Length: 223
Length: 223
Image (cartoon, rainbow over all chains, first blue to last red; front, side, top):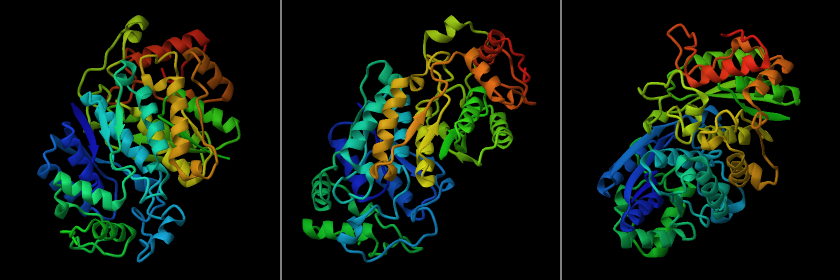
C-alpha cells in the first residue's frame, strides 16, 4: 500500500518516514521549496529519503512569501534562547499561515494521482502547542474534508491521515526514532543555521531538540 | 470587511467578484499560476481585478504539474464537441487533482494574514457535477477545517466561505453577472485557446458558456 509522507528533513518527519516503512507502506516522500530561509532542510530531506528507502521523493515548489508574515520566510529575526514558558505563551512568529493545510492539500493531490490510501504527517500536539494546525481536531477535520474533495473519496475508498507522533513528547520521538533506526545524523531541525548549515543551538527548534535528546538519554549525532 | 476572492479570469469567478463588491467587501483577488496551458486566463484575471475595483490582486505561483495527471496541465488532448450527457458521465479529464482544496488553502493563508473574515469561490454544483470538490458538502467540510487550522479560528473569529454560484445554472450566472455589471468581454473561459487567445468554441467550457448565454438571451461579447 502506498503512503504519501511529508518530509521536512527534520527529526519528526524522518521518524514518520521510518514509522511508515515499518508499517509496510511504500513511501512517496514529499517536501516543499517554499522560500524558507533554512533551505539546508531540503538537502537533508533528499538524503533521508534515499537513506530510508522511500520509493520516490519529490519537491513541490510553492510561493508562501506571496502572503508574507512569518520569521521562517520573511526577514523577521528568529527568536533565540527562549524558555518553554515563553515558547508556549502564544503562537510563535515562526508560524507560517495555514502551512499544514497547504502541505496536506498537496499531499492529497499526489495521493489522488497515486491512488494512495494514506498520508503521514509528523505533527505534534505537545511540543508545538502554539500551532493551531497541529491539533488532533484539525487533522480529523482535514481528513473528513479530504474524503469529500477527491475522486478517491467519491469512489468510496477512504483516505486516512496518520499522525504517529501527535501525542509524543520530543523525548518519546527520539526514543521511537532510535528504535526504528532513524539516521538522526542526516536530519536538520534548526530555524536559523549558519551559511555552512550548522544549527544555531538557540532557536526554539534547536532547544526543543536538545532537550528531547537529553531526556531520552541519547547523543544527538547532528549537534 | 475584507474578503479573499478566487479569480480565475473566467465568467464564474468574475461574477463572484462582482457579487462580493455588491455585498460591500473589500476584495483581495487571488489567482494561480499553476502551469496551466491556457495562461491567457491570468491576463484576463488581472484586467478584471482592475476593472472591477479589487483592492489588490496577487498571483501565487504553484507547481501542480509535479503530480501530473490532467489535461489542463499535461499534454493530454482537451476533449472537444461533447454533449452534456458525455460531460456528466464521469469526472472530466480536465480535472486537476485536489485543485480547489489547494486553491482554498492558499486563500486561507492570505485570509489569515489579512484578518479577512470571508473567502469567495465560484464553485458550481450543477454544471460541473463531475468535480467532487465543487459540492456543497466539500465546501462545508473545508470551512470547518479552516476554522480549526488558523489563528483566526483559534481566536474565535469565524471564517466564512461564500459560494454565491453553487446552485445556479450557467444561464443564471449570466443573468446575475448582467445584473451586477460584470464586464463579460474581459472574461476568458476556454480550456484550449489558440495562440492569440481566441476560444476554441468546442471544449466543455466553451460549450457550457455558449449554452448559458443563449439560455439567458444575452450576447456574449467575448465569443
